Image (cartoon, rainbow, N blue to C red; front, top):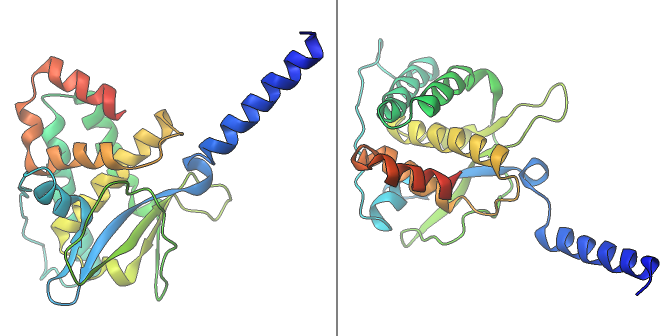
Length: 223
């Protein structure tokens, strides 16, 4: 086999691999979903899946708003406080990630754009999943590395966001922080299943029960 033939074969195999893999997250983006039900309202998908798929019950530390919690500013303040309480569950098992996520949380709002009267295109990264009968899965957030000066990292469907309770909004924020790290370390990742499981462990506080070796293996598989 001569050098030209070898080069052509290698080039063909590389091209086929890239085509099969498809674009990575930097091109296609990724996102968090919300379950919309006419009777039961809106629920963050990760919180629903934690119970239905893994038998883990989310345990939120609810906070009292400075006001009535009715304005967008008051709801956001509650969301951030609940999200920080969730992130704080990592302090004992992973201080490095606790610091990283706490920092990203503080800049989340300024890196987000809330769009009104618009449905976000679906990002097919759910993998295995299910929803209650009569409900719909809606794209709540699309995250992508900003490409242009006026881009934002997080695009959020305000029409769905407004219906979320602060604890579900906080679960959505944690989902995005996890995806931000996973996507940077593994741009080829195709579904959010692994990070949703990690989120379920945080939401239920089961993460505190992991031994150091178990946690190390968990993070190896997720990140």
